[in-house]
Image 1 (cartoon, rainbow, N blue to C red):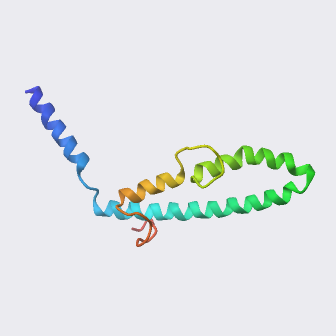
Image 2: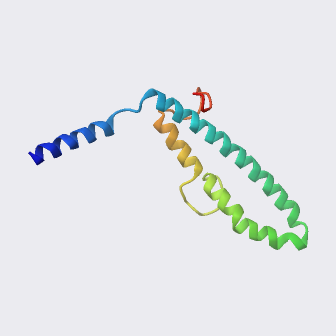
Length: 121
Protein backbone atom coordinates (compact mmCIF):
# COMPACT_ATOMS: atom_id res chain seq x y z
CA UNK A 1 0.00 0.00 0.00
CA UNK A 2 2.78 2.45 0.86
CA UNK A 3 4.55 1.52 -2.37
CA UNK A 4 1.38 2.33 -4.35
CA UNK A 5 1.10 5.70 -2.58
CA UNK A 6 4.73 6.48 -3.33
CA UNK A 7 4.24 5.55 -6.99
CA UNK A 8 1.14 7.76 -7.24
CA UNK A 9 2.94 10.64 -5.55
CA UNK A 10 5.94 10.21 -7.84
CA UNK A 11 3.68 10.12 -10.91
CA UNK A 12 1.91 13.31 -9.83
CA UNK A 13 5.19 15.11 -9.16
CA UNK A 14 6.71 14.01 -12.46
CA UNK A 15 3.61 14.96 -14.44
CA UNK A 16 3.50 18.40 -12.84
CA UNK A 17 7.22 18.90 -13.43
CA UNK A 18 6.89 18.33 -17.18
CA UNK A 19 3.70 20.35 -17.67
CA UNK A 20 4.25 23.44 -19.82
CA UNK A 21 3.90 26.82 -18.19
CA UNK A 22 0.49 28.45 -18.38
CA UNK A 23 0.36 30.96 -21.25
CA UNK A 24 -0.37 33.83 -18.83
CA UNK A 25 2.80 32.98 -16.89
CA UNK A 26 4.81 32.91 -20.11
CA UNK A 27 3.50 36.33 -21.09
CA UNK A 28 4.34 37.79 -17.67
CA UNK A 29 7.78 36.13 -17.67
CA UNK A 30 8.49 37.48 -21.15
CA UNK A 31 7.41 40.97 -20.18
CA UNK A 32 9.52 40.94 -17.01
CA UNK A 33 12.51 39.65 -18.97
CA UNK A 34 12.09 42.55 -21.40
CA UNK A 35 11.96 45.04 -18.54
CA UNK A 36 15.09 43.55 -16.98
CA UNK A 37 16.82 43.67 -20.34
CA UNK A 38 16.00 47.37 -20.70
CA UNK A 39 17.27 48.06 -17.17
CA UNK A 40 20.48 46.15 -17.91
CA UNK A 41 20.99 48.23 -21.06
CA UNK A 42 20.48 51.44 -19.08
CA UNK A 43 22.98 50.31 -16.44
CA UNK A 44 25.44 49.42 -19.20
CA UNK A 45 25.10 52.90 -20.69
CA UNK A 46 25.66 54.45 -17.27
CA UNK A 47 28.80 52.34 -16.80
CA UNK A 48 30.13 53.67 -20.11
CA UNK A 49 29.62 57.19 -18.76
CA UNK A 50 31.50 56.22 -15.61
CA UNK A 51 34.40 55.02 -17.78
CA UNK A 52 34.46 58.41 -19.51
CA UNK A 53 34.55 60.15 -16.15
CA UNK A 54 37.38 57.86 -15.04
CA UNK A 55 39.40 58.87 -18.10
CA UNK A 56 38.95 62.52 -17.17
CA UNK A 57 39.91 61.87 -13.56
CA UNK A 58 43.02 59.90 -14.53
CA UNK A 59 44.43 63.07 -16.10
CA UNK A 60 44.49 64.57 -12.61
CA UNK A 61 47.36 63.05 -10.62
CA UNK A 62 45.60 63.52 -7.29
CA UNK A 63 42.64 61.39 -8.54
CA UNK A 64 44.47 58.46 -10.13
CA UNK A 65 44.55 56.29 -6.99
CA UNK A 66 40.84 56.85 -6.39
CA UNK A 67 40.05 55.77 -9.96
CA UNK A 68 42.39 52.76 -9.79
CA UNK A 69 40.71 51.61 -6.58
CA UNK A 70 37.24 52.14 -8.05
CA UNK A 71 38.15 50.21 -11.20
CA UNK A 72 39.52 47.34 -9.11
CA UNK A 73 36.58 47.09 -6.74
CA UNK A 74 33.12 48.56 -7.18
CA UNK A 75 33.30 49.23 -10.92
CA UNK A 76 34.65 45.73 -11.55
CA UNK A 77 31.86 44.18 -9.48
CA UNK A 78 29.18 46.11 -11.33
CA UNK A 79 30.64 45.21 -14.73
CA UNK A 80 31.21 41.54 -13.96
CA UNK A 81 27.68 41.03 -12.61
CA UNK A 82 25.94 42.80 -15.48
CA UNK A 83 26.99 40.62 -18.42
CA UNK A 84 30.00 38.91 -19.96
CA UNK A 85 30.95 41.95 -22.07
CA UNK A 86 33.73 43.22 -19.83
CA UNK A 87 37.49 43.10 -19.72
CA UNK A 88 37.74 41.07 -16.53
CA UNK A 89 38.70 37.42 -16.24
CA UNK A 90 35.78 36.56 -13.96
CA UNK A 91 33.10 34.16 -15.12
CA UNK A 92 30.08 34.48 -12.84
CA UNK A 93 26.35 34.20 -13.25
CA UNK A 94 25.25 37.58 -14.54
CA UNK A 95 22.11 39.64 -14.89
CA UNK A 96 22.16 38.81 -18.62
CA UNK A 97 22.27 35.08 -17.82
CA UNK A 98 19.11 35.44 -15.71
CA UNK A 99 17.42 37.45 -18.47
CA UNK A 100 18.33 34.79 -21.04
CA UNK A 101 16.88 32.07 -18.79
CA UNK A 102 13.63 34.02 -18.40
CA UNK A 103 13.32 34.45 -22.16
CA UNK A 104 13.93 30.71 -22.55
CA UNK A 105 11.20 29.93 -19.99
CA UNK A 106 8.84 32.19 -21.91
CA UNK A 107 9.70 30.39 -25.14
CA UNK A 108 11.42 33.41 -26.71
CA UNK A 109 14.95 34.06 -27.87
CA UNK A 110 14.74 37.81 -27.34
CA UNK A 111 12.32 40.43 -26.10
CA UNK A 112 10.53 41.29 -29.33
CA UNK A 113 6.77 41.25 -29.28
CA UNK A 114 5.57 41.67 -25.70
CA UNK A 115 4.61 44.71 -23.71
CA UNK A 116 6.58 45.46 -20.52
CA UNK A 117 5.01 43.92 -17.42
CA UNK A 118 2.91 46.13 -15.17
CA UNK A 119 0.83 45.31 -12.12
CA UNK A 120 -2.38 45.90 -14.09
CA UNK A 121 -1.74 42.93 -16.40
